[in-house]
Length: 414
Image 1 (spheres, rainbow, N blue to C red):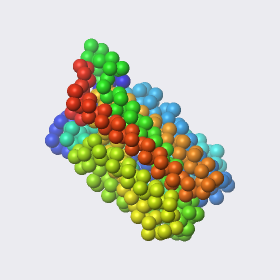
Image 2 (tube, one colour):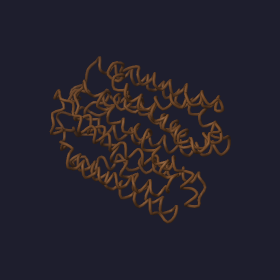
Image 3 (cartoon, rainbow, N blue to C red):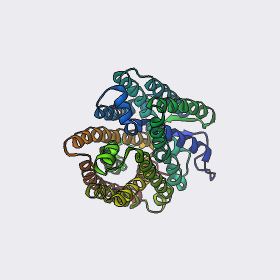
Image 4 (tube, rainbow, N blue to C red):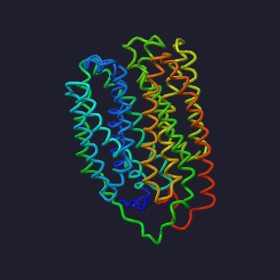
């Protein structure tokens, strides 16, 4: 990547850019809610469209595959365009696709609208973290990215449970339509309120050869960890409703309540993630992943012990809330300035490789061995991811100790 992001608002200013970050966080909220809707509405969508529930799960896998194939090329194609315009446009396309899904006459039509929404989602997510980072000074990075990515956790606290409850009261179509209308309004506000952000090429004389960039090894380690985390998360979460019903024996009416518990715990994780990222940059992410391992193991071993299951679900939620800002902060700090755009787009791709694999593998596991097996496999996968995050943190610390090469910029200092 040969560009450097330049925002019109000085990123070194002491004033915390709360307003712009809140709008970006709201954008994350609506996109993550829309991404997850088939998981929360699986029984309702399957019955209305006349397909097996596993085919609704396939909508999540296809979503991930589209994001994988389009995120990096579209990020490169739009890198010279004002970030505000790209964010607003991606939200508007996302909105129209969700409204179209609400009026789907068939599963095949819904499949097509989800492909369009996934393209917009990939562009949005490849840009939003780099854009937010450009508005923040180094000492604000952890708090700022926790606020932005906290929108994803809020989606599990409010978005998915509310959409699930709304679908049970009315129709899954109403949930998709309401989400689309909300996104369209947000796109207008984003265009009018967010500060401009443009991209300028880095002079060739100032570029070090990419192969010599010391941030590559830690980025590769964090990237592979992100792939494994996505695999584990969606192997388990896409099939959370079958797990609650079949493994834990929870009535359908309580499903939205437990999803709220999951999300509320996630908000607690978000609340502490910024502080953890700034105070314990080398260990916070790995420690959080160990919480995942413990939660998945408990869900696999004791699904019928309701108090244990609820506590484990809450721990899983708390870990999810903290994990996203922690890994994004780790990436932005580890990456040299020239690799930030590529790192942001690549983690979206790698995470969605994990999502695609997890959604597909989760369906096979659940169909063959029951949804409890999904939790057991997720525990093992996250344990492996923990090793990679520890390696990435050590490599990033070594790079920071040595200092950037000529042509690199220290991450987190803009």
